[in-house]
Structure formats: structure tokens, C-alpha cells
Image (cartoon, rainbow, N blue to C red; front, side, top):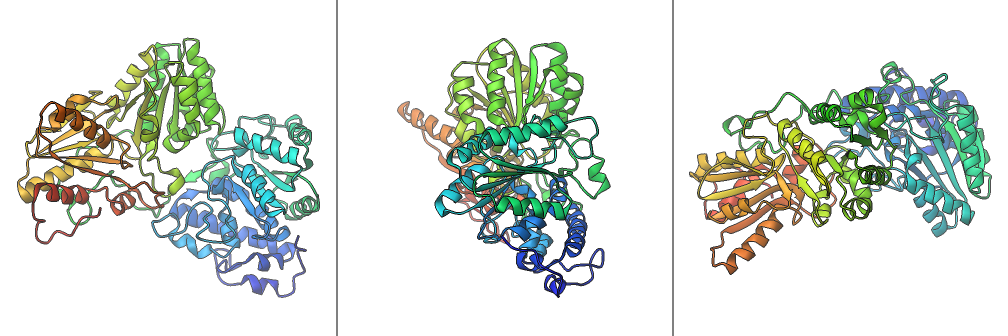
Length: 633
């Protein structure tokens, strides 16, 4: 443990200079320099960091509300503990912005969450102070236990922003208590995840009076941890640096497992966040971010205005989902909606308001959500579980054994399918189809328009057995069309040379590539929009066989989607004496893809209009048009 020292010339070690408030220059900060400050200097540093975060994160986009709440806590952690010798794990990792600043990375916010910029989560490539790269919650205590057992020394786990609702956290806390290991759990209790925390182990938001938690629930926290063998310190004002340092120093002097219960205010210091009753500005889009680009937009080598673009609709996926679920609930009392702490991000607020008795927020607990859905469905209900693709993978066992094995009619609405952008490797939704496609009797659909989504939801909740997955990417739905609501496949374009098979956001890419090939080479292309991914739409593959070449276009990991089905169909067709066209797959590599704007990441890893054109030129023996840059991929 460090002994936070006297003033001396410590402020010069931190640096001074002009800034938002004329105080500290944040560049090049180190934990050692911060430990040299006196209490007054720390308070000024906290104010400077908070101002910096408000300005920079509003410009770049990112997780703002939770980070504004942990400024003082993070300063105190680095003054009491000696990172990286005392590993500090942030669970969930989006609370680590002040940690990045205190460990010398303030300049990284210039390119924050951009393709070659600094990550919005802890990153081992960036700093030895980052132990665990995590955008999925509740796993920090398990890491802390493992690190402590391996090193034979203390670890520190900061768990909060709803992460203590996750079951895996409870499992690890129980194991820490049983093993009597010196793991320091710092419970950042702000009463929130995105929405209010659904738990009796929260004292609620400090800004609340008479709602949320209270003294009884604060006592629950102490009783819970002490029953599992932890020493308890708290509850501590998470914005009082003096009290925080005292509590953390006491924890550091405790030999066995200890919890420091800290109450912080999400959105602290910025009125817009404090006044946001929905999610305390958990995440902001960023005023300096590039304007959204339709998924699969052509690269700079081909001007977007020269290519076919399917018109976009005027509603978001969340708008369509929320409105449709309310309509279904009005018509069918069996319809229930479950969320894992993300009502606003998924468009469920109106359903929550109108049907509170059939709305179930279980906290950051995807396994519980799927198990709850199974229980509801077993009694004749029709549960719908909207969830981000990356988070559904946490509940695959329940999907297989609680839902599919029992043949239960549960609907999974999977948002953020494909490459998602600035949150990086653990947030891309590129694995779900490959993981789910082998589950018996599970159907998978990929709509491109609001009308398709509505029809698919109506069909799903009317099923008497078997789960349904309806997935879409982080892009705007296409405009509804009379023929666009078909729920198996839609012929977007008819040709005879090349057949392009695509689904979801990649339909735009396929259409643009078909247009470019016709304009540059006179190639006549068929484009199939494949809506139903599982079970396979065999008619589409039968039609594809009649072309000289077939290319599948997907923002999934290679081998996990349409191309596998195409090859299986061609293998069967050979037994029937049918010819075999040349084939190719446009898809993502089996890799952990980096952060960055969605269209940039897709193009870099070979999923773009240019990539489709270049592959078609090779399959058809064409020469690239003079003056056109080689495609990526």
C-alpha cells in the first residue's frame, strides 16, 4: 500500500498548464505522481478529469455516465494500491476511463474508439496496468481469484454499474470466501446498469430519496458478503476522497477477502447525465463521430451515387420492435418481454410503461433471462427476449437445454448482429449464427425491413413449439416494400451470369456489387436476399446452381452461414448429375476483430462492394477495370 504523501512539488510531477479549467495537464500522468498529491490537489485533479471526460467523450462517443461516477474512486484506488503489482480489474471494463488517464493515456482520447485509436475498454496492448479486456460483465471476481491463487498476492476487483447482478459474479464471490483468498472487492454501487439495478443488493442511487434501495438494502449487502466469509467496509461516499482512501487502506490491511461498499452517482457532475432518468447517459453517440454509413456502402474506389442503393426507411429497428411488441401484447395476453438490463437500447421503454406486469428486467443476467423465458413458455406464454448478439452467446447452454430441448416457443430478437463498431472484439456479433445453426428445431431469420421484422415476430409468437431467432445488424432498416415482407427469400435482381446470396445488411453490398459489375463488365447478376437462414431455403440454392458463379456475402465468420449451406447443396446436386458453378465466400475471418467504424472494419477484413467485385472478376475470368483500385479482401 502506498502512503499518499504531502504536497511538496507533487503538482509539478502531475503537470500544470492550460486546460478546460486552467488546472492540470493530464498528459503523461502516472500513479506515482498522483500518489504525491495532497487531498486538495486530488480534488482539483478529479474536477479536471471530469471536465475532460465530459468534453472528450461527448466528442468521440463512448460510455460516459458510469465513468463520471468513478473519478474519485479511481484516484483513490491508484493512491492506495500499487498497480500493476496490485492488479486492478474493472468489471465491467467500460468504467476504466479515469484509470486510462491516470496511467498515462489521456492523449489517446484524440482517436478514442477509432480504428487505430485507444480502446473504450481495458487493453493489454495499451498498458501493463490493464489486466482484463472485458466488455461483458460479472467475470471480474473469478479473474481476481485466479490471479491471486497464481501469484500468491492480493488482487483488486472493481465491480459495479450493474455487474453484481450476474450469476457468475456470485459463484466467484462464494469461491473467494471459501478459499479465504486476499481478494479486495470494491463494490461500485450506483444503483444502475443501463437502467435501475434489479437487485436487493443495492442501496440505490445516492441522488434518490425514498426510492430504489435504502438502509435495509444497504444492510443486505453487509449480510450477504459477511455470510460468505468477507470482511465488510462501508458504505462509503464514493465522491469523498478522504473517506475512500481510509476505507481502501483498511481493506489493503485486511488479510483475507474483503469488500468495500462504495456508493457513487452515475453521471456525477454533468447535469444532462444526472437528469437523464432513463440511463444517466450511460453511453453517448459523439458529436465528432462520422455520420452513420449504410452497411456495405461502397468503398471510395466506387462512388456511392453511381451504384444501386436500396432506399432506407424512416424508423430504427428499436422503433419497429417496440411498436410491434406493444401491438402483439394488446392482441395476445400470452406475450411477455424479457430484457437483461437494456430496455432503452433495445426499444422496450413503451412496452415497459404499458405492460409492466408482462415486462421482466432481470439485470445483466442473460442465462437467467433465457431460463425465465423457458419457464414462461412451458406454461403457455409466448416470451420474447431482445438481446445484443454478443450477449446472447453467454446463454447458449440455456438456449440449447432449457429452450430447444424442451421444444419451447421462445423468440430471441438479436440486435447488433455483425460488426458493431467502436466497442471492439468482445462486442462484435459475428458468432451467433454459427453457434446457433446446429441447434435442433431452431429457426433463424435476418430481416432487412421493418415490415419483415413485424411479420417475423407475428409468426414467431404464433408458433406452438421450437425457438425462433430474428437478428439484425447495427444499421437502419430498408424502406418497406410490397414484396419486401416475404419471410423466406426475396429475389432482388434477376440475371444469368452471377448469383449473389446475401442477408440482412449485406443485401446493400450485393446490390451495389451487381450494379458495378454490370456497368464495368456487362455482367448480368441475380441477387437473392435470403431471409431465413435456418432451416436453409433450398429453392435459392437450386436457382443459384444455374449461374456460372455463385458468391455468398455475409458479415459473419467464414464457414458459419450461407456458404456452408451452398456447398452442401452442391454436393447433393452432383449426385443428381447437375453442373457445378464456381463459388466463393465473402465473409469475415475467424479472428477477434478490432474496434473501429463499422464500414471501415468490414472493408479492412474483406467484406465490401469492392471485395465482391474483385472476387467475381476472378471467378468469371474478367480483367479489373482500368483505374479501379484493387479491392480489399
